[in-house]
Image (cartoon, rainbow over all chains, first blue to last red; front, side):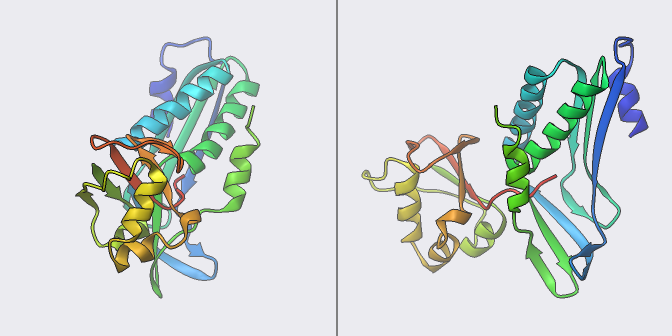
Length: 139
Length: 83
């Protein structure tokens, strides 16, 4: 992550605040240990949606720079899934935009998680709490 | 019309993509889904609960009333779970 932030902020001395979120594969799904998680995605639409979400954040807040990295394929507990970084002159826009980006990404970006546990494989269900989190950003 | 299926819709239907030629009366997303559900048990099972089916036309989210045409790319998938 340090390398990503360095690349993002290089040369921009107007940046006063950098906010970030990283999503990581958990060890447990409820009371079942997770052996692996595979992220399927819609090639083409994922890039398009992530670019749209980032453009929306930059429309709403004065950001100096921003970055979204989302992995796909088979991951294991402890692996990083997603990284969101936002840079602004001050902490307000950086923090708000960071939270906005992860909340929107969870309801807009076309990825689907398949969990492998001791009981076999199952697709993770979308959560109402994620929808609610995205809705709180409605203008 | 190119159709793409993802996640458990793909596993229930049994294929990840196909080219289809719906009947002329299929003009929108709703009609397309209803017609697909009639094509076989895998489709019917995948599309049984419309609340769990999301649609994108040419990589933009679309509702049931969105028009579809033979040159479109239509994707069907469950609510997303990324992040």
